[in-house]
Image (cartoon, rainbow, N blue to C red; front, side):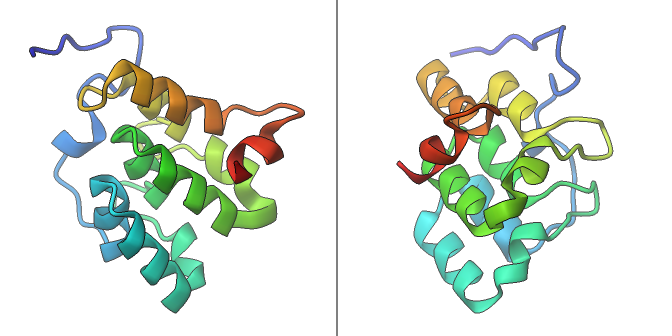
Length: 130
């Protein structure tokens, strides 16, 4: 089905449509490959905070693709820094939450499920460990 850019969101073009230089963790997160993300995090835990050339975290790529399981794993790996990761903006000013909501590649249920994990609140810790 055709997609219509969301005019209210800076991320209307979508993160996957921008040329970018990224690390394997970004590619794995963006494709929704949970097993590879887990393997890369086990080998290099600091890769959860790796930035692409557009200053995007792996979390940005997973959120843009609507990959809730990968988002959940990345937030768990960020541990105490999960709120900062969820609110981190890339060079365009897009946060993972905005990318999840504006995704042109994920279904509405996938976008909403992913966005729910990124929302702050009293039950945020519980949501990311479900």
